[in-house]
Length: 62
Image 1 (cartoon, one colour):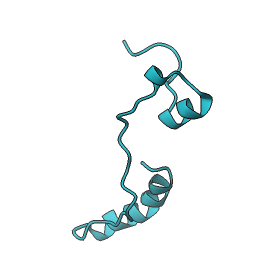
Image 2 (cartoon, helix red, strand yellow):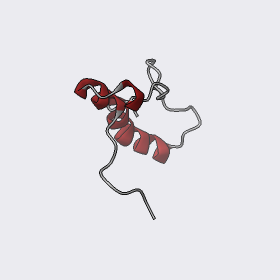
Image 3 (tube, helix red, strand yellow):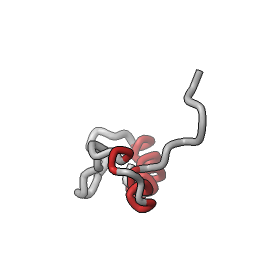
């Protein structure tokens, strides 16, 4: 059976809302700040998918 109750808030929202310190995840991974480029070995179809999905994911810092 899955977890009950509402989904948890992201850490950034917890900080903004002033949650207690013990409720804030200090070890949350942070994506790199460098530009993310597609790998060289990506096929043409893979590159088309990258070009479609990557900008949204990068802007959301996923």
